[in-house]
Amino acid sequence: MARKCAISGKGPLSGNTRSHSLRANRRKWNVNLQKVTVMVDGKPRRMKISTRELKKLKTQTV
Image 1 (tube, rainbow, N blue to C red):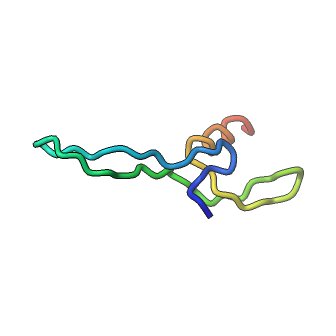
Image 2 (image 1 turned 30 degrees about the vertical axis):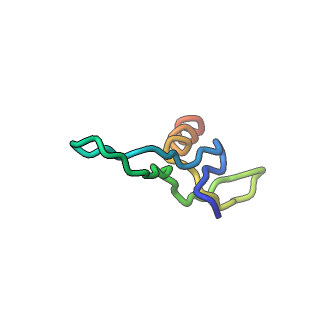
């Protein structure tokens, strides 16, 4: 399964790492995904959610 958030659809970003001499090497920033059990239509479902979406869900339900 791809590294994507099940709710927002956010995926990894790509870019360059830069050394002091400004040489560019390609790199990837992955999304901080967590495996969480979420209630969907009254049934528990396991899904991978980014921490930002998880934080939003927690503030909405409380």
